[in-house]
Amino acid sequence: MVDGHASRGVRAAARGGRAREITARCGLLARGVLYALIGLLAMRVAFGDSEGKEADRQGALQELMGKPLGGVLVWAVGIGLVGMMLWRLSEAVFGAAGPDGGKPTKRLASAGRTVFYAAVAFSVLSFATGGGGRSGDQQSRDLTARAMELPAGRWLVGAVGIGIAVAGVVIAVQAARRSFRKHLAMGGVSTRWRKAVDFLGVSGGLARGALFAAAGGFVVYAAVRYDPAQAKGMDDTLRSFALTPAGPWLLVAVALGLMLFGAFSWAMARWREV
Image 1 (cartoon, rainbow, N blue to C red):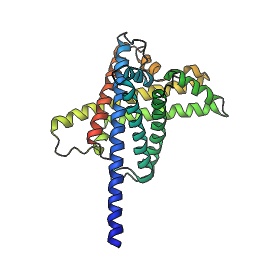
Image 2 (cartoon, one colour):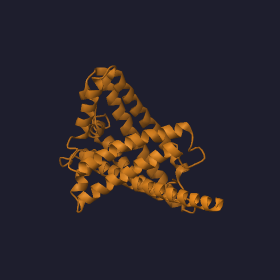
Image 3 (cartoon, helix red, strand yellow):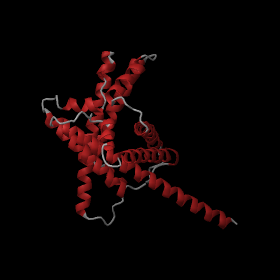
Image 4 (tube, rainbow, N blue to C red):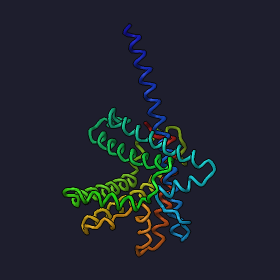
């Protein structure tokens, strides 16, 4: 009897582990699609050929919708991101893979990612059902304006901006240190592939970190100026790179990095230990 219960428990755990793996890998694939398309649109902006599409999630979904079976593809991305959310939720509740996956800080980070991907998945699925017509820049300004109307709203907006900027710095530093290696199961994989994944992870992570850090900085600036219009979504943030002394070439570098991060997400879907 005891052996029977133990056997059922093992099978249930195996099914749970398999479900977690599927949701994680589908989520990583979907994330890769979005970042690759956003990077492509940002590259077009850098060369003056944006075709009226914004370099953000909304523009990426519009680009996807214009392809054969575009509606199906958008739904697939949305469902994949729901899987990403469920994977991060499982990490918050049960702990992540690895010897230190159960640490409170790891669980808290996973909880934060759960909220983030829940919002992203909701946005994509809203688009798939015909909603979500506002641009990412307009949504950012509207959300900032509503937050500033709350008690101590200005301080709240500033704190959120600092949090986003710090997250960007952390993403970049972790990418430069190749922290992602500890999450990869690449035993038996050739050195060439390992070096390729390293390149994708470092270059893509640096670009993603720069994007988050800049976006957070604009939110902080909006709080300091008490002006929601200063907050920028992904498209405006990316375009701001072209206004630096480096000109459009900095935007080209960031855009290429985002496309590489998309490819890195696909590599993670293949080799990530979940």
